[in-house]
Length: 111
Image (tube, rainbow, N blue to C red; front, top):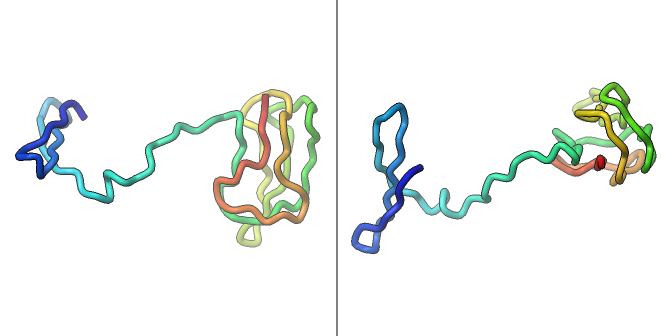
């Protein structure tokens, strides 16, 4: 989005450019109240769906590689192995075996 301005202090319009074409639109209340986008933090490993932690295989301070299984998340009767995105050291473990977790819950933190 490039420009934003008020017309008669009642409606708010936004101009944006796609493929060199300018489009004007209004922003509705739902859009204005939405939560701002937060980029993914690769140091925080989160649950991709709600489920139950079956087992945790690592401890704080342990060095891990991208092929190390950190824990098992059981969701929808499937056991999902959770791997780190890169080699690193475990900073914190926020789950225990048998714990139910919601979607996007921070399971393990890397340094």
